[in-house]
Image (cartoon, rainbow, N blue to C red; front, side):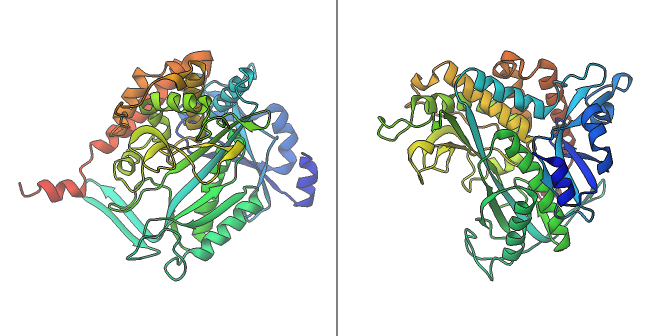
Length: 437
């Protein structure tokens, strides 16, 4: 990639480097384009203590842009080029193990080194709600959520068209923005939710680019919505009694050009490796949910029905299962769809954990395991339960040094604080239930 040519042709003035700590929230630092060569070579100083990654006495880190892939920011007022970056130690210049993007890179290298696949493809499905207004406020004596939806329909909203789909132009504009930024969209449509739920299904890419696309795509969606005076949310369950929003991941592993999940000798064309990979994910599904569904709101979606999976089993075609083998297409590009995740996740950590669970399934030939007649496990009922599951079942992440005990420990501690902060607050529903008791 000739970055200098792109900078000249697009008249780039600002370089923006994005990165993501454990919490999954995208951070950025910007600088004039003239500083690019220096920062590629030396890195950019980062205060790790402000990110909760280091203590104040040993907080210096370096952020280095990954120049192997770039995005353009079509919504920036000043022409900007976007790179995602990774964190390094200041003294030795080594990758910091707690960097989530580096964890995913190590996971992909391991799968390829073991000869299981030489190509890994991920297709994310981004679901979100668009509201005309959303006001929320909470303090000791005041708790308010007031939503004005962009669409109001008496009917199921799936593939709804204008005039019920009043945000159709916005969604089309968003797909154009994604394309001009460098994110390819497969298609977009109104989702089942009657009050402005939408979906963009992105194209298949390698897992690093897929995770970058999710994060940058969320940024572009929020930023474009401001120019329309809309409010967009990727919350898993913003409205009671309506479908929640997920972040389904389609996973395709290829070896020498063919899906390892395909077996032409099998009646349903499902290979032994597909079964083993799926059972590995299902075996660790409760622990995985700490990464794929890391918010208290996540479990309000999973428990609500509306095609949100609740039990850990796989099937062909069924949207009730945690793992669905799409029945649209057969043949050598057969993939699996993991349906529990939502967009509150850190996509690097979520994809790493999913792939490592599937890898263990193949390593241990879990496809031979008899699961017929057994009642499938349920996903955790809340975030705390998910974190406790991860504490008890993290060995598959520690093997080969992809994750470390300190990373998992810090992540669990961070998320437990988040759980109790929310759990300990009174809610309006509790007043309705208990005020006059």
